[in-house]
Length: 441
Image (cartoon, rainbow, N blue to C red; front, top):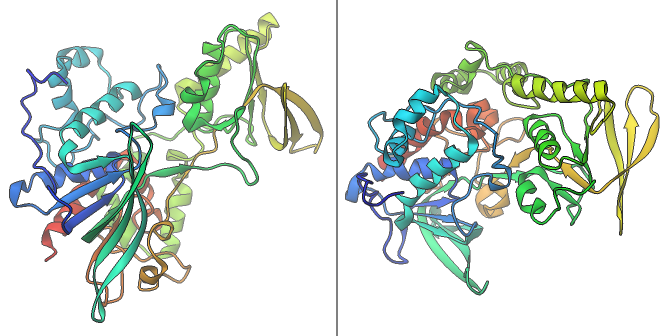
C-alpha cells in the first residue's frame, strides 16, 4: 500500500488495554476481517473489539498461491461490496489505491488471480492492524459465572514472540466471542505428514529447495479443484518430473457455475435454507454439492486433458492418471515412497514408487467444541441429529442462563447452507453479525 496515495479512513482501533472486551474474535481470516470492517463503521462509539490470529501475519491459503490460479468467485463478492457498496475497502477501492483500476477494467476479468485477491485481503487487513493480535492462539474458552448466569467468557490465549518463539499466556474476558478459526487440512484416516508427504495447503512451502530440473516423481491424491491445480502446477514447474494423479472418480468433474445454480450462494438463499425443514436442507446440500465440492473449473480440466493427450501422441508420458483407483498403503523409505494403488473395478493392486505424495483431500471447519469448554457446550442447544442449533444471526442457540453471545463463522453449513465457509456471502454475513452485536446490550 502506498501511504502517500492511501486516502481510506482508518478503522477505529480496538481495545487499548487488557480490560474486558465487548467482542473477541477468534481467527483473522477473510470472515473476521470482514467483521472488523463492518464493526469499524460504527466509529469510536462502537464495541470494544479485538481479534486474535495464531499465524504470525495475515495469510490466506498462502501455500496455494499458485501463479496462474484464479478466484472462483466474482470480484464484487469481496469483503464489503454486497453489504456496503460505498465502503472504501472494496476490491475496486483496492485497485484504485494500487493504481490498477483502469488496467483491471481493460483486462475484462471478473475473476482476479488468487495472488491479487490475497494482496487485496492483506491490504484491507492493514487497515485493521490496531485491533488484531497476530501470533496469538486461542487455547480455550471458559464461562464466567455471575450467580446462575454465564455473563461473559474467559478466553485463554497463547502469544508467541516472533523473534524468540517464547510463549506468553494471557486470559481475556469478553461479553461476545466470534469463532472464525478457519479450516483445518483434512487427511485420510491413518495418513500423516512428513518430509515427503504433505497436504496441498502447504504445497509452496514444502517445495522450497526441491530442484526443478531433477527427474522426480510426484503423486497427487484428490480430484477436486486443489488436486487438479496441484497436478497442473507440478507438471509445469518440474519439466522432467512424472506427475501421477490418483482419484476414485472416472475423471475430473466440472463445477456447476451456471447462473441459476449459483443462486444457491445468494444472500437470500440463506433465508430460504435456514427456514426450510431438515429434509429440504439435506436435499439442497446434496443436489448443489457440484457447485463447490470435488469439482474443477472446466478450463483447467480441458488443459489437463490436452497435456495428457499430447503426451500420449508423443509417447513421452509425464502425466499419469490413475482414475477409478484409490491409494491403500504408503511405505516411506530413505530413498522415497512405495505406494499401493488399487483399481476399484477389478481390485487389482500394484506398487508404484514416488518421491513426494501430496494429499489434495480438502479441509474441514473447526467445530466450536474444539475451543469452547464442555461446561459451556452443555448449555448449547442441539437438533435431533446432535448438530448445534443456530439463530439466524449465526449465534449458537443456548439456554437462557447464557447471557453472552457465541457467534460462528464457518461451521454452519447444516443451518445456513453451502456459503457458510465460502467467500460468496462473507460481506453480508459479517454485516448481519455486526448488526446483531451492536443490538446486544
